[in-house]
Length: 176
Image 1 (spheres, rainbow, N blue to C red):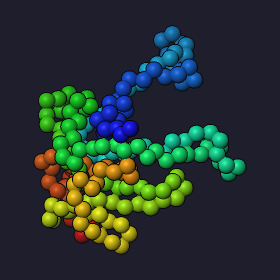
Image 2: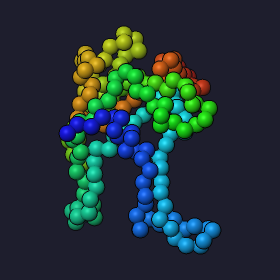
Image 3: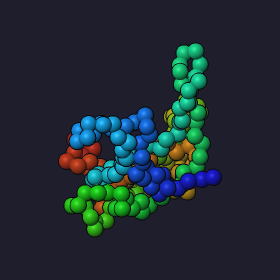
């Protein structure tokens, strides 16, 4: 069934016990030990880019490759407005701050691992409306159109950040 982006973030940040094949060498006891790892976010950037895992690799590919991959078509629902990442950020300086993001772009992938077609939904800073970009065609879209099983890369902007500002660099500085 469908998953939520929240479920994906929870899974990504869960503590994981490494396998016997992934032991860690302890400098204290001079032995290889099973260890745990945990992923977390340290900061809250102006732009948050989330890449959804859409391909799984497994052994037994063709004569050209030892691995082959399958496309993961599971629908991952994600908020268009109000993604709150505050409980994933570990920096003490950001504790208690509003770390809320709004979506402004989605890259979609259609096809398999060796071929495919990409489209994108983008929220225009000019008119505040969604648009679908498909090769040379641009057409109107709505916020409800952007959440699909083809979503591959999500672009969020921290709420309150100026449009076109990326830290100390503006779009004008880079593109003009």
